[in-house]
Structures are given as structure tokens and as C-alpha cells.
Image 1 (cartoon, rainbow, N blue to C red):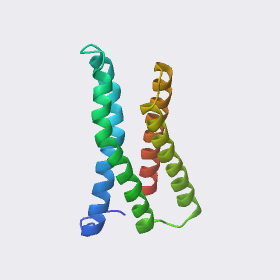
Image 2: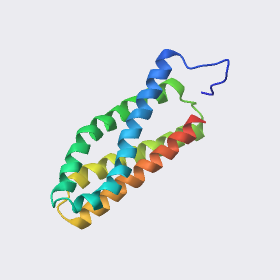
Image 3: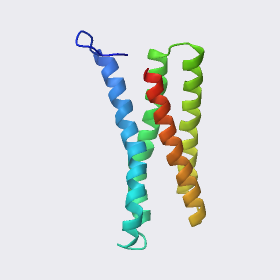
Image 4: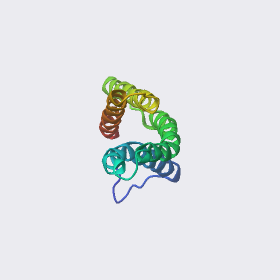
Length: 138
């Protein structure tokens, strides 16, 4: 939807998009923020990164599920129905699910290698899903 001086989003559309962008800011932005905090947190205490991760997860998982819900709401509300739009939406949803799976496995990892692999998969998939969302906004 293109906003001009003569066209503003209605209240329901504004609510839907605000919730979606806010949830993306928490999920994607939080992952990027955690990436920057883990190294310095190690210098504070050996358990500091895990403590930060648990705190982040209390915000991140509700945001992830809000992203899923508002993403499906967005698709229902503005889905173009074109082959290209549907293809990009399918790719985006694949990245969203991969991001969630990666984060889930990262949280249950038992080695540094697993933490790195699953955290990287979740983070890269989150950014890819975000980029697909920008394409869908058209």
C-alpha cells in the first residue's frame, strides 16, 4: 500500500502493520543486538551470555508468534494473488520458519559449535525474511 498526502492507512491497517513491524524489530533487531552483546557479556561473568539469552527469549518468542500471526493477516489483507507475489511470500515463510527452527535449536544447543551454527542460521534467515517482506510491500 502506497501512502500519499491524500491516502493514509485506516486504523486496522495501521494497527496490523505497526504490530508486524514492532514484532520484527524485537525478533530481528534483538538477534542483531544479542550478537553484539554476547562477547562483552562474557567479560562480565561466565553465565552472563546465557542470562541475557534467557531474558531475550522472554521477549523474542512472543514477538516471533506475533510476526507469524500478523504476517498471515498481512497476506490475507494485501495478498496480490500474482505468481511472483505468491512465490516471494512462500520463500519468506520458509525463511520465517527456518529462523524459528534455528532459534529453537540454538536455545537447546549443547556445544559452542551448535550455538554458532543454529544462531547463524536463525539470524541470516531472519534478515532474509525481512528482505522478502520489503519486496512484498511493493
